[in-house]
Length: 201
Image (cartoon, rainbow, N blue to C red; front, side):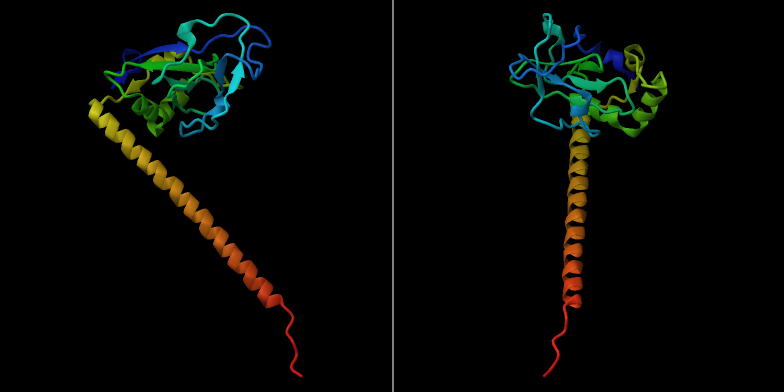
């Protein structure tokens, strides 16, 4: 096991001051990712991210780079998203920890997968502080132990996990279609059975 701090740069998202700092602005020069934009399995839920225009200059260091792993550090959900890169400068607020992995040692998608895995979820829950809104401190997150197989095996794990997720989604879709088909057949049967019979003359 290797502590996360030795595999990545770990920092908080940008602190945007002012009440209207994150107010939506259709002409804003930055895209802003919110916790609700990320699914439990680490997918971006929308292609139409909120645009904002901060009240003060945003440092270049605060802008996301492809391969950054976004980890919400507060709330009850533990998830992680690999930022793929967008045409517009993109930032997150202090509700996120931005993990910039050393890609010579760890594959971003593998790191995100580890953060979402059940054993790590247990460790993360133990690190949370607070009762109303649980928070994971950046320093505590830095100590998180990460299993570190060779890069080629990391990529293989990510590929198998992705295929397993696709299989699960297809299975769920098949069950939905099967249930829909069964209900349609039952409705037709009920309608046919309830039709009044025509007496013989």
